[in-house]
Amino acid sequence: MILAHGVGSRADLPVEPWLFAYSAAFALLISFAALRLLWPRPRLADAAAGTSVPVALGTVASVLGAVVQALALVLFGATLLAAWFGEDAVSANLAPTALYIALWIGMQVASAVLGDVWRRINPLWTVASALDRVRGRDPETSTAMGWWASHWPAALGLLAFHWLELAYFEPASLTAVAAFISAYTIVVLVASSWFGAGWVRTGDGFAVLFGLLGALSPLHRDDRGRLRLRVPGSGLAAVELRRGSLGVILVVLGGTTFDGVTRTQWWSDLVGSRREWDLTAVNTVGLLLTIATVAMAYLVAIRVLGVLAKDDADLVEQARRWGPSLIPIVLGYSIAHYFSLLVFEGQSFLALLSDPLGSGRDLFGTAENTIDFTVVTADQIAYTQVAAIVIGHIAGVIAAHDKAVERYPHRTAVLSQYPLLAVMVAYTVSGLLLLLNA
Image 1 (spheres, rainbow, N blue to C red):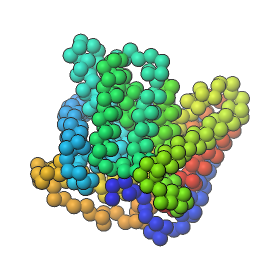
Image 2 (image 1 turned 90 degrees about the vertical axis):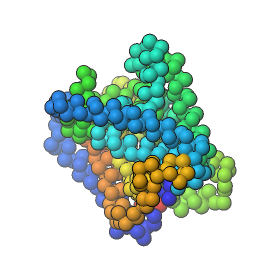
Image 3 (image 1 turned 30 degrees about the vertical axis):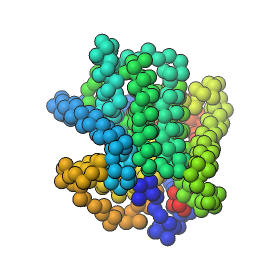
């Protein structure tokens, strides 16, 4: 079942996919109309600061963070060990599930709910910061400049992950998983050794993505490290994208869209009988073209937005300014595409933890756990997928509208949002049709 996410076939759905898609688009239009009338001034920036939580709760969270940081490092070591030396069977080896389920899906959800917890528990950061302390350097600093100080290395790292997940002909093979984890680790640790451990914050693609998704969380830490509670999603107003941040967002959004494309009958006919590297070549071109299409749609909308608002900022600055409105859409797409995989294959994670190498051990008494495929129905999966995409897009519309009324007079702000609304409706309809027709 690994990587076989989605709802299966049209026959599984409670209603026709086109009805889902157009109802979702209508919900976006209604949301936009409501914002025009009820949201005349910016509100998210004030809400983003939040309120402080009891000191005791913050202390408990810090202690738990330290414990989870140690556990994450142990799990990382076990995953790498399993990838290289464990049983060569996906269902009996911890590594594929740890990479594709626990890290890729689980941490996206955890970041949106609990905040940027990966910043604390990232095992690559743990190793890099320890090495810096041994060398007498401040682990929070980075000497990187130019391209290396941007988020473009992070975007390339996530593109490499998507290539393995969606383009490579055997993404769950132990050799491929071991090679990716090892190569990724070496690149990040060598760069952090050169620039300082602080580079991990900006160069590790997973760290950057999870940090951006953390803006959606009701929990966050202020500049002094104090835990605070805020309105969910309000943190988007405080997000400041640097060079390459938008690349990270569009790579993930385009990659998840390509996942939907590969599950259509049209793509199946196009691929035909291609196998192995021939299949990988076609998938690679498809992945890059899908990311480019998603990016182009966004950039065209931003160009039109600038014209309507009579804003003379250049296209790059404008695109970066409105980029945070795409963050909830990224999360919505991820939940929609990976929900069933998380629910079903996620159950096997505890079993694999007891026997990470597939050698017959039962360290925690969970090795014999089996997957309960009745925990959710096909209808529940479909409704969850639709809700994730629709809520993600509505949150994006709210974030964009709030930024618009902050920058422009109300009439101009509303006018400027039509292009973004149009591209979000297009994302919604195409995303749902691709997903639900898979």
